[in-house]
Amino acid sequence: MTLMTAARITPPADHPRPGLRERKKIKTREGIRAAMYALVEEQGYDATTIEQIAERAEVSPSTVFRYFPTKEDIVLTDEWDPVMLAELRMRPADEPWPVSIRHVVREAIAVGIDEDLAVSRLRARLTAEVPAVRSRMMESMSVTGRMLCGVIAERTGGDPQSLEVRVYAMALVGALMETTLYWADHDHEDDLKELAERALDVLERGLPAAPGAPGGTAG
Image (cartoon, rainbow, N blue to C red; front, side):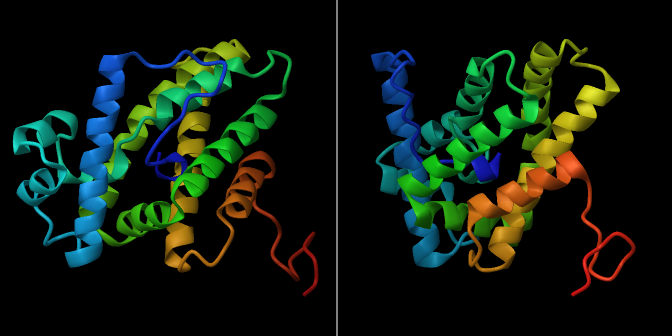
């Protein structure tokens, strides 16, 4: 989920530290991502090849493909989705679901912005401007949505395959994606945390009335 991405994910203090093998994998993925980000900044997305990324990251092209099936996946894939879902499961059982969602979204954004604001902006820009990246993002949304369905069902007692749960999960994922695109489309001028809060408000309360419309506020 692009809005929730961060170049590096540090598990909370009460989470078990990944084993040596997993840490090595994470380090390799980070190196490949860093290589691609640097090349894209230097010469643009389309001009950047897997071979160049591999050379810059000091790995083989086959290693790049082992971790990321496509170039677009280097932009979009990270370790955050599983952490996000684990965080949702750790929220108090009696906490209202919207409160839990807001907590995790705020934390996810804070991680991404604090780790590397420039990278967060680059990833958002590539998602907005590169059709192949945006198309791949649409595919990845369904994966995240299915994962989210399971957590929603656990918290609400619903059926993860029910229409209602699936609609809510995809609405949430779609809202966060559109928030990322909006942020990029407006040259990252807005505060991403505030944009996410506005998006979640729409999910919870529906569209606000336009100024001057019945029920709206006159401008």
